Image (cartoon, rainbow, N blue to C red):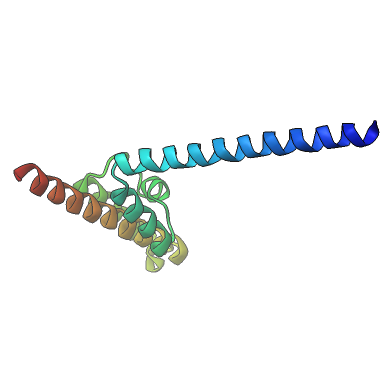
Length: 126
């Protein structure tokens, strides 16, 4: 009887395992389809920029103390923080370099958004 019980448990585990894998595959396919529907290219470019520059968009916004991607506000805060952290006035070179990296990251994000807006404008015309 123990042999039959072990076989029943084994077959049951196989059935449950197959059902779980099928559900997992379906969920993965659905999440990919949803990501594609939302326009994945901008997020992919943004994530790539974060990896290349080494700083996330949120971190860059925190460093430069901006909530939106307003080029004038970014430049104003960048200029102020760059001057304040200048080594000749007793500032920190490390902090100054973080400010520069944050500005580069936000500039890249603005470029990505401008490119996306330009492509959307072209699609709307056709």
